[in-house]
Length: 406
Image (cartoon, rainbow, N blue to C red):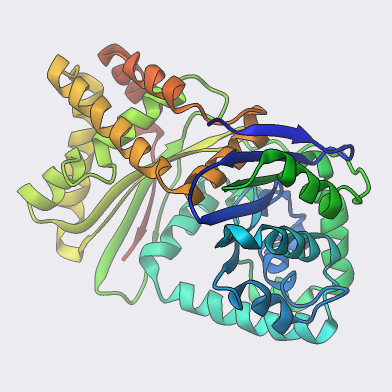
């Protein structure tokens, strides 16, 4: 069954897909993230994701944590560059409990001062832990290199200096400006009638006053390739190469997905894995990633290698980039690549939680859910010429930025 959709009078959308599983899922996704922070708010979107769990008008932090865990459920949240999401997993008999809890957290949090102070220390520890992992840190630093001077490039966690300055008023100001009802969706997957989901949404979300986005997002700066090397006291050298790519509205993103999967996707048979790891033994970890956003996209290649092998590994990566730019895929190669990507997408969609989160994002961006059959047809329609065209348009060596930790 496809997702069913209803819009509350305040603009919040409700989407639901009925399944026959005893386990159900729901979330509230808000179209607000790191890129929506003002300069003095660096880290605010993520900070709010933490402190909304610390107390509401009717619950203390312990009662929030226990409300679903007492019945075997789970409550969680995450922040991205463009979204903040609160989501829950629970048994279908606890639907009303989950919907009421999530709405209480998102719309009735009180942000107690003592909890704000405490959570700052927690996030400082998170920042310190993150800095101990250069293979993760380098991706955020690379985005800052690509989107220099724009909030889009900033680390989601923020900085210790900014965290220290946050007050309760800063929190409520950010929410008032960015938690707009026309930029929210409540999405669920579970064995319950859509009419009941709508009633629960009306009861728990319908009272929220309409608040529509009127301030447009700040446009991104013109991209200029940059190269930077940072000295780190690590045994291994880490390298990220990449560039801006197609946004969520660009039809060429389908070809870009396929290109990425061929070059350095999750399969162990990706070209970069076969060349860098299997053939030469230069790297244990190598991958490429393509992430489209509302008005931009990012393509990256990452590898970690011994310091003595950096130049050789870099040369192999460039060779593979040029190979996919210059040599057209054969019929069998292209067919296998399409089957692999379609299979990966189909398997991912078998996870009801993944399906829910993907559908919520799709509604925010396209005002309709993902249709796998349509996506599969679009992938099947990609030609070898399309792959070469995208490769030359996006990943020409002259367009690549490079960041090295050594």
